[in-house]
Image 1 (cartoon, helix red, strand yellow):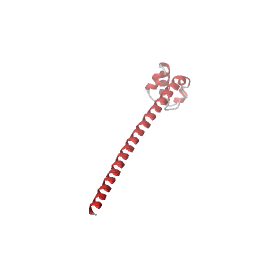
Image 2: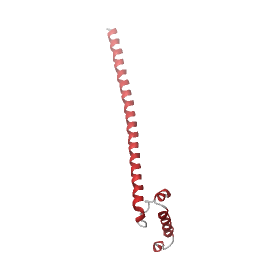
Image 3: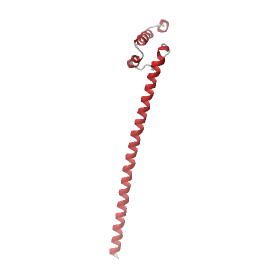
Image 4: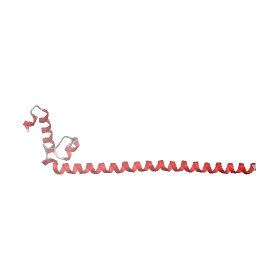
Length: 109
């Protein structure tokens, strides 16, 4: 009788240990899957940003020279953007920037 009880306890302990091990393994797999999903989402977002930037540069190259004086702040982000547009645009853009910093800058255009 005591032997049967002891055997059942041992068998129960093995079953509980197996369940705990399965739960740990499942949690590890879930964590890894979450990490992989996050990495993939970041990769997709990076590709999306790259495509948007390429299209922004393409639009600048195609249309900015006709819109000089009408471009809102922030469209030309840095010197590199001006390099895409050529020296004539760059010089005129910088000249207009200087005029806007002086009093009556709007009248100088």
